[in-house]
Amino acid sequence: MAKRKALVAGNWKMNGSLELVEQLSTKLNGFDGDVEVLVFPPFPLIKSAIDSGLSAGAQTVSENDAGAFTGEVDAKLVAQLGAKYTLVGHSERRAIYGESDSDVANKFAKAQEHGLTPILCVGESESEREQELTEQVVSRQIDAVIVKLGVAALANSVIAYEPVWAIGTGKTASPEQAQAVHKFIRDKITALDSNIAQNLRLLYGGSVNDKNSEQLFAQEDIDGGLIGGASLKPESFESICNSAKGNG
Ligand code: 13P
Image 1 (cartoon, rainbow, N blue to C red):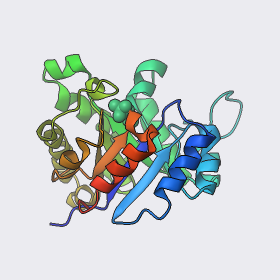
Image 2: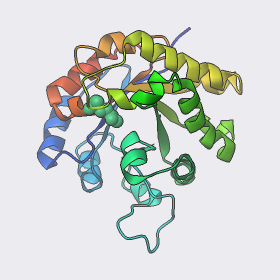
Image 3: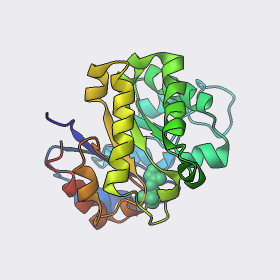
């Protein structure tokens, strides 16, 4: 069965510059193939990225509409800039800024309300994996959205499996480990709605680089990647995007 259209997204985290926007847009200008490419720069660079021809989204959005929330950015404004996606529930947001599963579900809802496609990030910590809690943790994180919005909400979303122990550590999940969790996620959603599950794109993130991406993306239930550090290096990122070709 044909896989879904591959998606490769660069999460710049709190890095990047106008120079990087320029370098990347030059590199990816004319990138063709059956791969959708996205970047998630810090908020102040989203507009420049879009103006330079890149597809860009936000790394998070507020669960509130515009109002007295100093320092927050609302989904409606992000959509007005021309963004189509936002990350929600990245593990750094959960761990450093205390976002709960329910906060993440609220952000997911707000993103969709304003026409953004949420990329829901899920994944277990190292100790949770050691205790064999991976499936339980990932299930709980996805269920928070399903309980709030129903499974139908997943039709217009992407899920990124990012094991916390693999983020920024150089310790990538093996293609088999990653595939096993992706299959678990797809099977879980298939039990609720097989059509949604079949069309849902599942990305892997965590120390993806231009050496390991091809094997990861070749797995049956891996539809692309969410790339951190390597997305800040235009040549590596281009090469990772190329390695997703033919996997859609
Ligand atoms: P690294 O690719 O740097 O491990 O980061 C992954 C990530 O957190 C992407 O959202």
